[in-house]
Length: 126
Image 1 (spheres, rainbow, N blue to C red):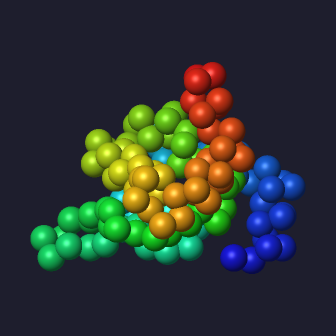
Image 2 (tube, one colour):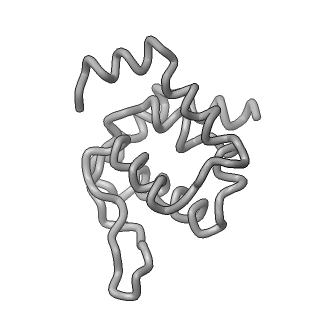
């Protein structure tokens, strides 16, 4: 939401550097880290806290992708999440699925964002 900072992160390859840090075994990959990354990626809420202290995906979310760099370099990087606790990986996948569900009011826009990032191509190249 701060265009000058976004431009600086891109020009300094900050998202790629952050991905390298998160790929290390010492990096903490928790629900809270995922929440921060999601909050930086979309303009709405994807996670809700339930009464039983478990985080749940808000499947009715109308959030749209606003930062394709976090999406591409971090959230879609399976090398980061393969070492995360299973629940964190599941929540990440559920959130991404929620963004591109056919009933999402901004489905076309989110699909466009995923397409612009060439995410499908990157997944197939791994």
